[in-house]
View 1 (tube, rainbow, N blue to C red):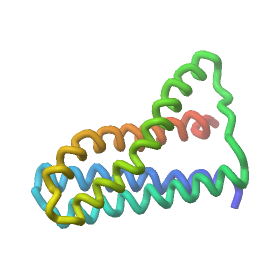
View 2: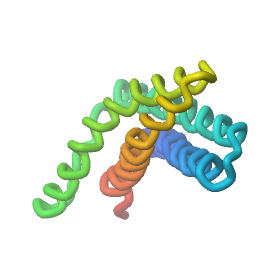
View 3: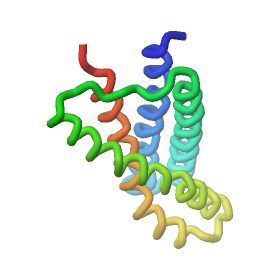
View 4: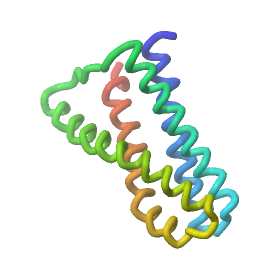
Length: 140
């Protein structure tokens, strides 16, 4: 598989993960539907894990994609990339803990309290990942 196709394949997982994440939020916040919320959040997590696996595989096979934009865009790119990487490393264990709390079925209060912090961070990580992908591959 060519590198550009592999990157598109990999990125489709994080896009689907972000859509599932927002759908899961919608179903708990506005419909109070715990089953659909759970299903979408598990889907978001599985898709994010698939993204991570394919991203690491692509990185191993092809290396880092250098940013080729202007110096002004480089500042914008790195101002998005740095918090993206830092926050992504925090989302992974936080999301795992949220799933653990929810599956225990008696820690919903703790789950809800932590989710109020993790959800917007996870949305930022997903959205900034899409922006980073576009900045690297969206031109031409």
